Length: 166
Image 1 (cartoon, one colour):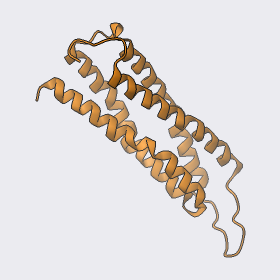
Image 2 (cartoon, rainbow, N blue to C red):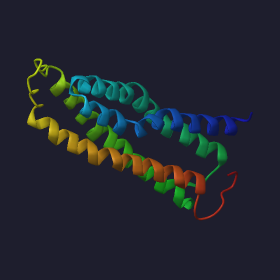
Image 3 (cartoon, one colour):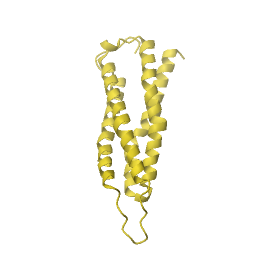
Image 4 (tube, helix red, strand yellow):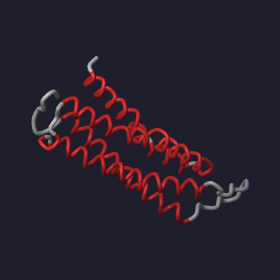
């Protein structure tokens, strides 16, 4: 296996392992919302996956990508699909870091000590701030999924022509 093949393998592996779980966050959130007794666990699970798996691999992705660009000898500015992908990646990473992870952490804190409902009693709802933060997650999360899917499309399709070594 050449270094170029290894770098491509690593780049794809990071994408699958690092970003694959992000497509499940909505399901985890939906199920947690349907079971108030487990909402904090669902939020903590999402936060743990985001901080311990997705974020570290999201930091590694541009490093391996830069290595791959160097190994393949690609001209970044002559490859529209590549620089557009990089811009979209910066947007997705920023959205994750400054919106999704922060909002998720706030939701974990807000739902940590919610009182359990007594048998036969109507459970007290979450603090009003929770609904606002959930709305933020429901907007910012799909935006990231769309950005990631677009980046994958650009990486596979490479519109605008073939590249040396592609």
